[in-house]
Image 1 (cartoon, rainbow, N blue to C red):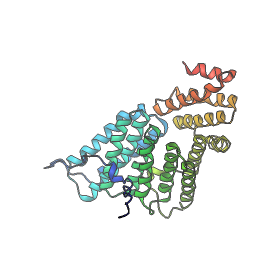
Image 2: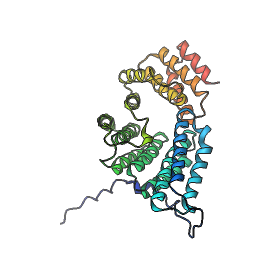
Image 3: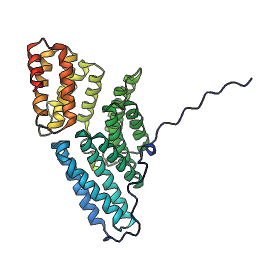
Image 4: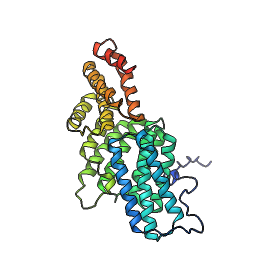
Length: 334
């Protein structure tokens, strides 16, 4: 009698599995628009960079309209105008970068379906331009949204696909970012062994960043990836794992020198510090930090920040009999 065969496991998802069903970048037949050149690509790149810098200090609901408008215009230019292959590739890369920023902004505004469509559009552009680093950034951004919006299994699969798709020759900063997102996806997905995998990914992210000697230049859009950002992610992972003795010192170190003009990120990072203090059974400290989070979040048009306020308030309810906490909980009702 023949031995029964174990069914072969399906291959892991690849970036191709997350492309749009229909190509939204197909050039229109019989294009007759004005021919465009390198100058227009450079202008678009400047627009993308300006939007990226604006996202550092403004929140999603403040930026979503201009971001999506710019993306639509860029797609229309690519589809309707005539251009050389070189210019066409430059346009595709600009569209991919713009889609990553616009998708991030839409996600921050709480428009997750719009963000997903935008990320997938950008992924299509990056793949057509054969820019594996950009494709990895887009896929990792969408994976991060999945991990934070109840699609943890999809988030982990896509974060791993982004890392695999970028390949070992990706710039060190890019690999560090992709590994950071893998770590976050593991810890959000939970399950036995995921904590160990998350910590391994964090270690590899640090090793990758240490290789950033400038010999393999990272794209300009990764300007924000540095040791401080890796420490923030490490501390967030520790907070999710309920290891406050590791999380609190890291967060305090980073926040002591953090740029106060980046209000949204400051509120987000403080929210993890508040939770870590609560986990450490330091309700008075948690309440003090939570008060700062609520104050900062009141001036930021960000659903991501609003969501973290809700998480902090829920965590503090365990200490409702502590006067400092009670005051914060009452303020949070306003």
